[in-house]
Length: 239
Image 1 (cartoon, rainbow, N blue to C red):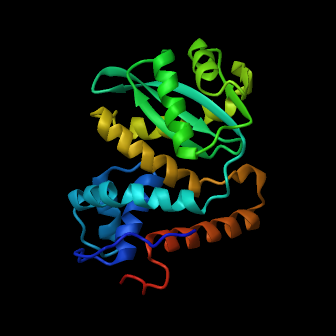
Image 2: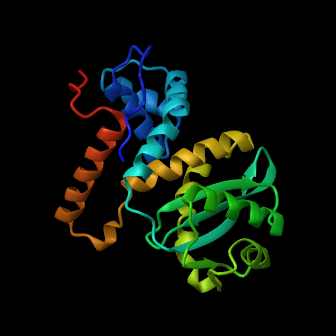
């Protein structure tokens, strides 16, 4: 069931300005100051600090709204983990996607062992409220331990060549990581990537499989869904 858009009570800027800033920041590798500049070109005077607060307040709400409107995820889950440097310290970003590349969940942890794998799987199952038919991972043995303890009835395929779907899903994160010159804290990285993984893929259909008219039609639908999620649908255009 679709939920109501977030409340904008107390905000003096119209909904479409707030939603557009959040879209710009999560869709393109832009800084808050670059979003500020783009909005100024459109005649909207918004400070980069205001953009930052909007992204922090509304980003996750928008991402959750988009996820609720997505079709039910497939029953084949791909799991993978990559290292990220956060304030100079190596951490591991765990990610699960379905067969279509839709992000199911992410989690940043300091370890890449069985305990970390079990924690991520438990979080993933709690969020999805089910188990998959097939779980595909790379050759990391920690997945095998977590699989045997948490979902032994699920088929587990462990092969690096089968997991390109999850590995490819890390590419937008790497792009943002470079643009942001790294993440400053685990908490900030977790919050940003949780929202980013819900918003960015919504505007990244598999364009190489579409004709140009088909792509434009698909994007029109996705922008309409975005307007519904943010509450901008039916609002008058900003000057």
